[in-house]
Length: 397
Image (cartoon, rainbow, N blue to C red; front, top):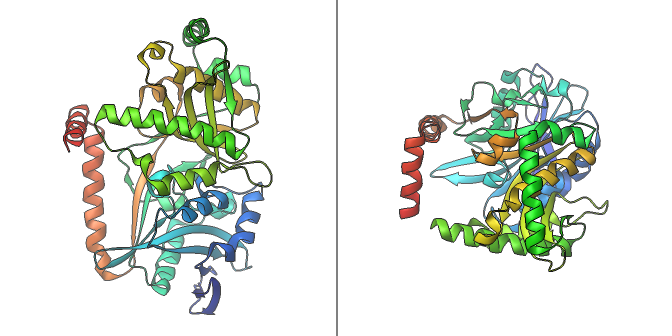
């Protein structure tokens, strides 16, 4: 593998070449790799999650959420010079160590690399690890920490998940079919659909007609997000915990990611259930999207108890699933973490792992501490008693 040190975002001198023919380039500017990145995204063979779209990563970095951390984009090429793997990283200090992690932190549910194809993702895990170690040495990285690595994505094994520890929580999703009505009948039981129709009739009697809206402009997205922020603030206040969406950098990221690009497609798609006559937004849903998948990032609902009995959030979810199937997307997931509405609608568990790749000798202590922390979190999250105690402690703090 030839490891190329970056210079103003451009690959520089080769340092070494591995016998397996892999080479690596490290870039320090998004613009330097935009053309390659978008080309990989547009290839039907690509294997990636919506969180690794160029526009999603660009919006996140531009908002300044990781201010103070350097960005590095790692590109692995085969012996023919073809890009096989692209991995956007931020580099920050943890004590004396320089640690790399995938761009997005807790705002991205999945941190998988972008693979040019299933064949690229089929590389031996040890080859990918060795490439990361050599690239890390060249870039001054002590360790890589990878959260929320799917064991499989779209049926293909993820080599970066090999040997990782089970994450504290998994993600939950469903496959969508080409027939929207057939998909709805499969995802929602007959009894559930009957109850939702009854609740929607009563909601219409209470507020007048309701409609499902998908933001098609930056202004429409901003209107839905304003309702989302208010609904989430009320919800978090009721739980007695801090509101992560009050952060200005997070709001800048969402504003940039929900604005449509030149093709009319945003990095994050936002939906709302709206009272047609008053314009009141009753529930919202936002998700990272690409041509094949909707990845749920957040949801909210009006906390007015008079509305709660009509379950506006569940009505919106029903509309959302039908809309995504009608748009031709093949899958929809509702993100990481356990929730009742996920259990009722999802038929797929997306198993996740946590992975640490050590580079420098000093990073082995970090890897050990990370493994202990992951095991502890996993035990707490999988025990109702311990999880309830942790939630109570969180409220007290």
